[in-house]
Length: 292
Image 1 (cartoon, rainbow, N blue to C red):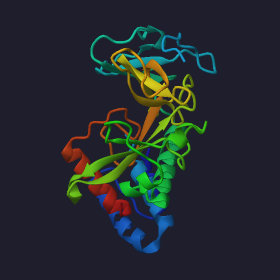
Image 2: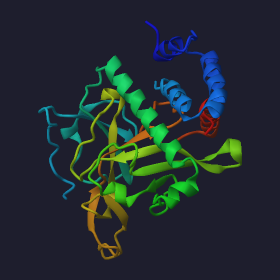
Image 3: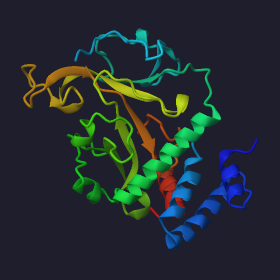
């Protein structure tokens, strides 16, 4: 059976293997895209996507189908999936923050071709939206209301989009993620979107089946949350109050990343760590493919 990249290339009259030569093909089409226009860019985005390899202590509830979800620690990493009901209800003692990944699919479940296609298609829609909006330029993202909450210089949040009761709209991502591009003197460039569930207690929709794993954070020290518990607005003061308003909570809402470059753990990876050489290679490949 041909992999997705091969099938798409054959559609365009070229047979390629999933090797560096395949990415040379993508780069070649990218050169044409810059002269042909956005429609071809969308095709290139599809090709690149085929590299996809309140109360905090509430009892976890089954999903809409009556199934309990699975969970595992991402930070600190524990590869074993367990019932979500086994997550400690109390805040963690150490480390100061634990990231829990959650999924309605068991660890033995493999994504179907339909789920893989749904994931690829969603990445394409996000790429198209980013190109149309001009968000690869951080100054344009900030002009559109994506600001850095606190000291986090990777995530830029749009509060209006967080509070719009919409989940997974590529035109209205709750966060844009920017990293310094080592190929361009550290200029900040868009690396992905982050989507947040449309309610404090809402579960993230796994649009790509077991590929699209959501996660949330549990903190030792409570943070202050406003906007129905969806907006983190700082830490408690020495007296245990929220000086910026809101309520103290130890858990974030659910969220999922959509990476717009090759990520070693896949296009929906929870992990934010991108070594310099990995980031350099991923951004160079994207530039060759679509010119951004």
